[in-house]
Length: 337
Length: 298
Image (tube, rainbow over the protein chains, first blue to last red):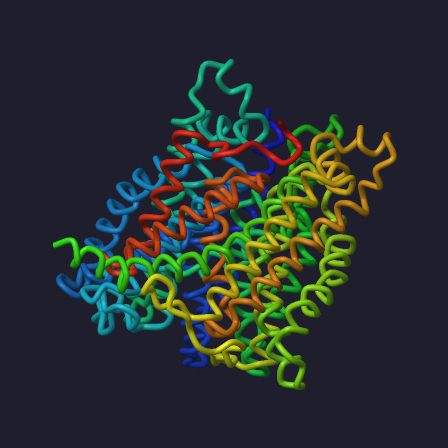
């Protein structure tokens, strides 16, 4: 027996499977035609997809809109860049960003989870703005230039080693990390803890009656999302060789929110598809005009008004119906979100 | 010793307080718009900063046609009234009755802000403009050097703020607004045209932001992202003062801008933002509702 949430989660897994197959196929094509540009672009899209994933954990499952998630993404990128410039080790950089995510998520969470709703949105917005301004003015962190000259590294995978300079190789490494982040999020959200987060979104006044503390649940969700964001951010300097304060900016946070809303709130996989789509769109528009924000802003407003379930909502309904029919053909298909 | 203190007050502290006061008055104008819109419609207008920039750009564009500053000060907010009215009617009402109103309207206005900001960049380019100061010169009051334009800004801004408070708390129109904020359905059944009041209040808030934009344009430069830099302060003021409270916005606006102005004498301006933000966080911890109650309540 599977309830609506589990079926929806399975439908997401199917869509991630499709994404991975498509990614592997494009990587093969990319290698065959010796492409660098589009593989690099797709890698970046995946990395920002990780940031969007963390926004979706908060918005789609816990009901908290973060307008400052780039704070964690950017700090992950800075930590990773600093580690890589000292010791060029992929795993060390990842571990350092993960620990930084735990600590910073806890600190930020203690500040932010005291409030809900619009207050939460505004306090995360403020936190990110303040930290971005401090980084922007700190000489030791390269101030407005950021940190330049992050070395090319070899990702040691035990059996083989992949250079971060190899477009297809590093694309696959990032794909693996992001899919792992997705899997970890999907797994955690399917546990009883995850169900409590969903309950928190639905009706947080009832949670205490079930014997749980809303504050600690919210804090756990916040820290979890922060870690997802810092780990995604850690991949950025490996790809581009630099980090800049732009990564911490409201533009980055806002983009992640746009990505999630376009892709589909509360689907996880929507964050990844949304990021792919937006990056592609931005690149296509970029060849015509600098003013892609007008187009993206209008698309985003359209999605908010006309597509509350995002693009994934359009497709997933069908998959959910099929999965439900396979599962228990005698019952009418139902869908939760 | 005494003379040194007096000299410090005269040449360092007092000018800084006046500068902070001019900035504070403009922040309050923007914050009052935000807080009325939230108090009445329950909507956080993320595009408010861009409407502030809209006012500044509109003044810039109309000013280049040769219109005098005095006329712009009245004309720009008036022109922005229909803009705000239709924004509320056409965009916000579309998602207003959804279950997740806070988040949906916030996202929608955020998108609108993006579009507006890029439209400014398209029309005016990314570089800052610095309009001429309409009133030159300065006076010396009790030995304190005061630029005329800042004094003018403080007086006009304060007069507008007082007028707004008077209208909201002392007129029949204000009573209708407060009634609609307190209980929408009850107000409607008593004959208050709630839909018009909502759209009107939104338009009014936008016009106030535009007015602040016209006022501040000669002091700070005019550039496409000016709204984004400004709005954090306005949001902080609104939260500390209490979302939906006009008195709160005034008190918090004066207090926070003074803290920022005076703190920047002693520490690097980079660190004044964390101080102001820290006050907001402490406020949220101690008294999450802010200093004062909501519009229409108590």
